[in-house]
Amino acid sequence: MSRHTISRRLAVTATASLGAFCLSVLPAAATATPAQMATSKTNGVTYLKSLQAADGSYASSGLSNEWAFSALAAAGTAAVDVTPGGDTTKNARTVYRTLLSTTTWPSTAPVVTDYERAALNAYAAGIDPARVSASRNLIGDIYSYWQTAEPGYFGPSSNFNGTVFAALALGGAKTQAGVQRTPQALRDSLITRIRANQHDDGGWNYSKAEGDAAQLATTSDIDMTGAAMAALCSVGVPNTDTDITQAKAFLKSKLVPASGAFNAMFGVNTDSNGWAVSGLNACGINPQTGDFLTSAGKTPVDFLIAQQFNPGGGFKYLPADTSPSAYASVDGLRAVAGGGFTATPPVPTTTGAPQWVAQTTFASGTATKLALSVDDGTGSIKVCSVALTPTGTTTTLGTLLDAATTAATPTGCVSSVTPATGTATVTALNGKANSGSNTWKAAIDGSAFVTASRATVINAGDTVALRWGV
Image (cartoon, rainbow, N blue to C red; front, side, top):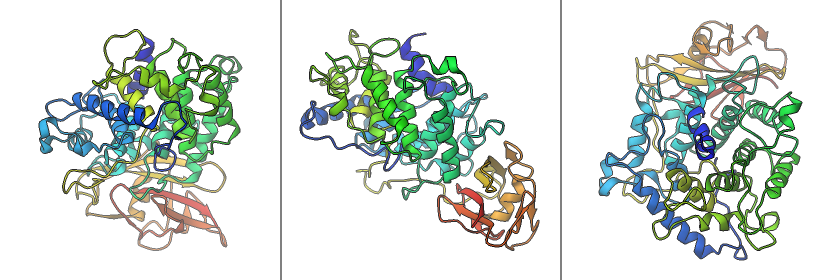
């Protein structure tokens, strides 16, 4: 299997945000000029538009081009504005949302990275990942892969890639108002695991290294280092942090002076450069100055632009290639445009099209999921996806907690609730009672924590956090 397949596909098949994933503003003194970068973005968008199928789709079952949404958004193009032959009824956003809403998506044997990939691209397309449809909540889907025996990992810990992309998705796919929808305790658990997997050379690889001295001593991967850097920054780690600084030094050590490329594990290529640059972008580190300006006056962005066919706009995977690659074109454009692994959706130019689409109410009788976390103040957070079938357009916190006792994945998120019925204040959860100023409090979609009440209204797609404390 080629490096191209391994690096890009693993994140897709085994498989950020206002702030961390915003577009970087590059100085006029950068090697690649603003004009060159603007031309690269314009032509790159043109090429990605050419990948749209006649039915309006980018994504399908199996391998697909849906990562195009992250690149288009980074380059300032709204997915709803991308149409086949001008047919607005088949715009890319609507078609993608319909696909994600189907019961057969993603497959009969899904893995956590399916949902993480979808959350990142839905967000970039202007689809609230938690409110795709009455039955589809991608944040709830991701929560179901929490590893109770190894808190902080999502999906099998051996596939460390799944945990990195959990951080990218949960940290990058914020609410429509730009708020982190997940609680700090959950983000901290991700940070802890990502830090524990950083190799001795400052980078990361796809597989788990935590606790294994031999693995930690192996050479890191360029692609995964970019993704892990972005993951840390998307959940709140500053770019001055020691681990980010060490990762930056690892990437710098792999620069090829003559071209600005990174010498990746399987050689120089666009995808590896794209992932590394996206990691730098996500952390607010300029890839065109300082440490990333080589002795020959080249930068990683120079290399990417040199890989692009113009005016066609596609990027080749290897320098010797004579035709563009769809995946290399996505990675190249997203990086040149200043994006991380997702981006805030641009305001559409299509008349009447909103920036965001979302399912705002439950459909009575339609089964759905909600994302729930429970922090009892001991440093051991519980995370789960709760299955329930609402009987109205809204539900209550009491109903959600009751459902969590029998219909949560993973199990054990909630074992008991006091009171067990009614609409009163929650006085005990999982056997832990309120005590003085330490009481159970609830937050929804990143709001401030307030007294937890069974009567609290829960809407479709709400991400709910319970916390015991002051």
